[in-house]
Length: 375
Image (cartoon, rainbow, N blue to C red):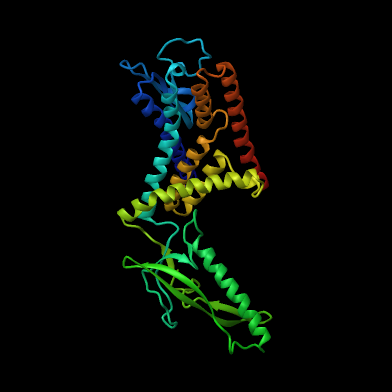
């Protein structure tokens, strides 16, 4: 069974890479570029077919983790004078081809974010139950959008559960101090409150939620705890919240924001890695990605609905970076050529890209090793 989840993870990752290369292929075809080969995978070809009409070669190679779209004259070092050669095409056309892979990845992130929101939901929570013994201002079905004015949003706001925990912890600390300083009594205590904004019946409502103090028997006597007016998840009746599942229109309206959110999370993670705010052991390469996808898929296949737009956004962000060998770097070199009126020496450019791909491959291998050995 574990093998099947690993295989599923590989298929998902391969699909995302092929979407990227298919973007280059589609835009290249639209702009009349001559394409020599579209390959699924790397290494020795298991299957190949050459179109008699276009001369394009379609291949399936032995190592399936990747693929490429090869254009005629793409790697020439300036000696090819044919107008069909990739490097002899207008700069703006080449830039569109370079950006096509990133664009297709991001469009995939948008589409699968929409699917995610309309099937399982994600970060926005909906109240499913509460203890009727408390005086509650909310109702079952309320969709929580803000806590104390902070937006519930995994990327551009905060996650709801940590926000509620933070509010409860602050109240518990305050109540415990009061309880100890008033001879183990809550008499006269001004109760802690916070604001919760919800959507109900198409309207946005903000109300005040009161946190009630209580005590339980601990190993060293009574311990002060906080009851969030009946919204407690410890009950045997199940969780008080579930992810809100959007209808088709609501999901469409928010899927763009969620896709940008996934991309923003990737950018923040890269920045935190560069500035040493997170250890490199928390990062991972291809093997780590496959392993984590397989692990989560074994718990619930619905987790794959989260991984697909996340990986798509990851590939889009990663490839737009102006690092040698990546699409962003090719765009930079083409822009320089466009401004100067002539390209940088093609031999020098190819060497730079070759060194870049070697560094990237080494980095991917190293972070995988560090992730599994040191984490």
